[in-house]
Image (cartoon, rainbow, N blue to C red):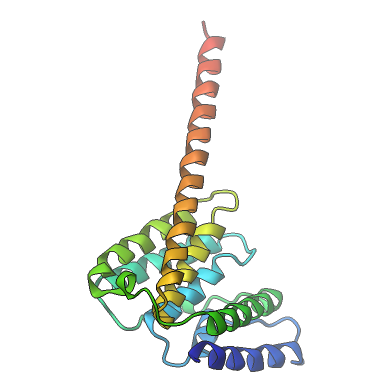
Length: 209
């Protein structure tokens, strides 16, 4: 399975990083991407989406913009994506690199064992435009500075990328469920912020009456 082969490659890189002489240098996004070989667009989607859940301030802004680029490439049915210098040269740090490599290894291991080609309707060519819009919507939520707002949309896009890589319609269905939960969270939090803003504005007006 492709997922298991990729996991073995990532584990070798993880051991090398763990036993390296320097415990301060991490990996750049391009180095992580190079581990995927000639990575198709879906593999880039998985990698960048997982980067969005790395606990570093500002990653949602950077990778949210990169995911918008992917949505446009997806709409155009491009096979691969060349990242901008700003994104590809971004260094995650030693601890973040270890964390992300472990997460990637686990994701590909589980996907490699459990996934199989099925439910090809959601992976049909006529669904390409829908998935491109779906990526853009989830990337928009990731881009916003919401508390824990990166998690659900990021894992929705991870499931989407894995579903396309492994031709697994069940993973695509998981992507829809997680993405809908992210949208519900966004709507509820936006409504709460709007309500608090209105109450604050009314309280401010009351002071001048």
